[in-house]
Length: 92
Image (cartoon, rainbow, N blue to C red; front, side):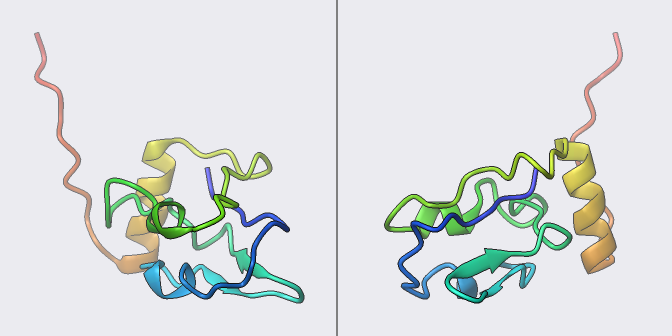
């Protein structure tokens, strides 16, 4: 799932530089997240960096852009040209 920034955003400017995918930019009134670039930091970090640093907790999951972890990893690979090294569970 991509994330979104709600109108509780105080435009503190801390989230934008933390995004490894350049998915965050200033919108008309407050910061916005481009769902086509947001991977929830999958491929970069264990946790979404913008959520970790946001002082007002205004970055929830965007219900209009539901994605699984494999989908987010595929988006990360498309954006970066990287090849994933997700751990594979052993077969029994």
